Amino acid sequence: TWRSVSNAALFPEGDPSNKDRWMLILNWRALLSMLLRTAPYLDEHKAGAPPMEASSMRSKILKSTVSLIRSCRCFFDQGVRPPGWKGSDPVELDATARALWKMTETDLLYHTHSNSCFRAQIMLYLFHPSKCSSAYYLEVMPKWMESWRNVDRCPEYDYLWMVMFSRTRKYIHPRDHDWGALRRHLLTQCGYWLQIPFG
Image (cartoon, rainbow, N blue to C red; front, side, top):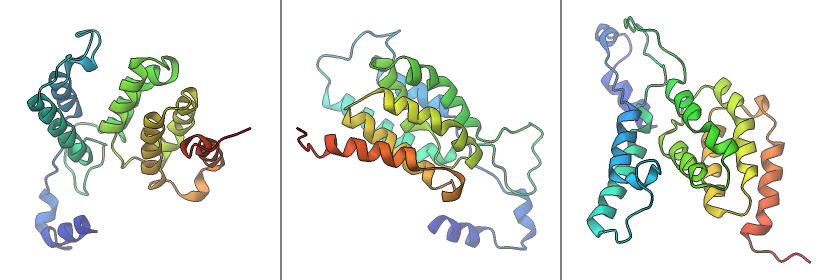
């Protein structure tokens, strides 16, 4: 990939300066605060409803904010440090992913068919880093599947969960997980997605 090629060019193997490498780590909570300031109606505790007449400027700012968040996902702190890291603070593997899941879990599992459930799914989609340990994904996937099954016949919700499981698939070996439940769910949904009439 381009990233591995650029890293090889910037940090040649055997170069003693590699020991002092720096990492760019962004705080996802700061971006969440920015999103809530851009679209305060996402938080029903502070604003009851979206603005009735959204200007084109407000819409443009919101789209730019969402694009920025999606571009920054790979820089959220996941507890991964380069060899020779000399930081004194302890690091937690999958730190951002676990914090996001903890923040959204209750809404996704128990507040289905409510605005809070769909907002939680959008937050997970926007902020959840793709690169997580297989142990983390194996831990949360059954709960994700349960949440997905709780809401029926909603193409937008289905799309967001398919994206999440597509990210998951990159970091789990095919033999480490039984994908049968996901395949059956996808096949079950195909009739609705394709608008196939049933007698």
